[in-house]
Length: 427
Image 1 (cartoon, rainbow, N blue to C red):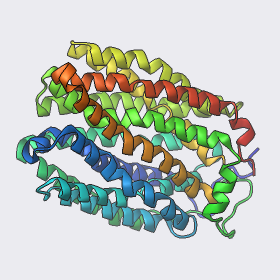
Image 2: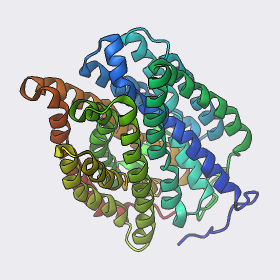
Image 3: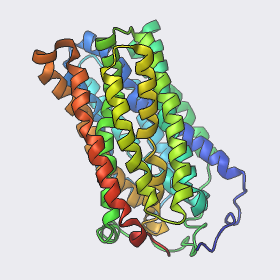
Image 4: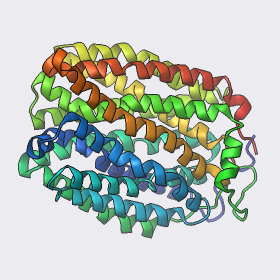
């Protein structure tokens, strides 16, 4: 099916693994800076006198506003210009604003700094998807993209662990400052060592000298492919709960289980790391294995995973036993991240190489605007609303009611599976 199975000229075989490794490292910092606010929320709430709704706005809408709005125009540039330069600039901007969060003295200052983090991270992911697709052949892309997605559980776990420990030792402000400065140090290393690959070099018809289509061309093609929109909406529903849990579970462990800052940092970091690493790789491996003969399996794998995760999540939320809670959360944490490898690979294969960054950005726009922008805020508002009825356990029931989004995500992925074979781009 694919004519090009050897690396494009000038690309050494093992160099692509170095590129993947440093892309993962950048993605780790992406999620450290994105999610560190969750473990610091309780300390910030106490010092600045904020409500759950305000924390939800900072964790969700403040980040998502420019992150989603700028993602598509940046991707259009990335489909024409150097993706490595764009990612270097993005890493520098979001790391700088993360450090500035440590100097905020009120809600609006912190809100604006989180807007800045979103501005930077708008250029940090879609170009990476495109780079990986040009460094790895089609039959390896789901696993390569899954490996890249290791940055999510490692970054989230690192942000929770180191953010909590640093905050406990020297204060929440220094947690922001130290993590931001570390990202700034990584930016020049990335630019100096990652080369721009040939676009579509592994595909049947390399497109290095073909002009990149515009946004209208990309949207026109994608509107002919219902599977793309079903995947995007399914991922969005999962992200409503996924990002909401990532932000609010540390507070849940404090309020409903009485865990202190360092204890809940270690406890939740373990859930994120062990569950996330297994789930991300398993999803990519199963996607490559079962998707080879039937492209619909790229969507069926996550659809089944979301369904199976629900009883574990519900049990973990309702259980009073911390050891049991850990096990009950590790399993669905793995299952809930199995969508990443197969879904991201499918998105890359629904369009030609010259549209990959733009298609990824459109996918991320839908996913993040709904997932990040709505999910974190929604759980916070619902928690405030349920306080009169459930008191300190209001967050427990807010999360429990949010589980319906995983059921909706599963349904949308099953619908996408019925169209993927037809919509697949075959050059």
